[in-house]
Image (cartoon, rainbow, N blue to C red; front, side, top):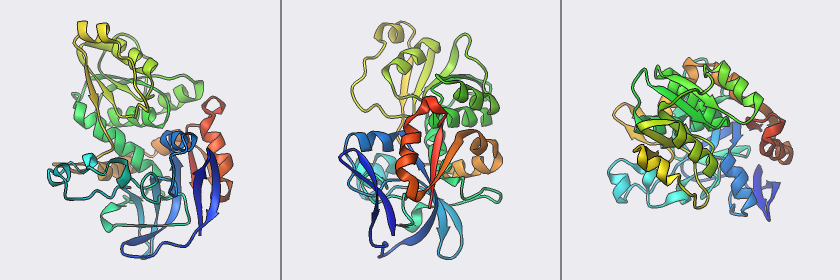
Length: 310
């Protein structure tokens, strides 16, 4: 089968054996290119098939998204129910430590399957994964239903944050670099950022965005950090301390009293079809993966979420 891999900073389509063994085989319908994929390719840190934002069809014809994790199940965080903090770290994530879904097929444990609500197009359902990242982050921060929320960053995570916060009943503002990102945010209900906010979501993953997020926070407010810093960052220490702003980082997604974040994300995508319409900007066939990665890297040219469709 075809699979997207990378070496020496170059994305390639390779022919590899179809997966075999225990688990559920999923014929891939959609695989999103995440900012972390771009970073991993650039850093030459990929030894597996890429792709952790994945949806497809099982062999019995069921459309699904995937929770692309294979935690060990035996370490202390796993036993405590916080499998997102598994000792395996990135090694448990499909597309990072395990072969992912930028391929014709992927073989996954049954526990990873996320049943899609009626009306959700499986070709859009790779968005379930980034939505789950944001649902987890906002759940940790736990803003009130009428909280004023600002989102810094207009990429996929930022726009998902707009949608999730709006669904919680919050007033939401967006700070974004590009016009097309601001336009997408407006379609999802975001206003321009004025004043200070009860919760600020730093969705750009940069030092400058963190500084801006802290500056937008009210005294005593929180800054949620759903993204990844790939190296050390300098914090706006004086501003943060004088106004007692709390930082609330999060990683991936998990389970809570109401179920899995990933299932909540699938439900939200079903309730809010404008999420896919606003965020997905480009679709490429799998054979055009090189061009797709080039498009995903060029935010100024209009890309938000770029999807591969085998």
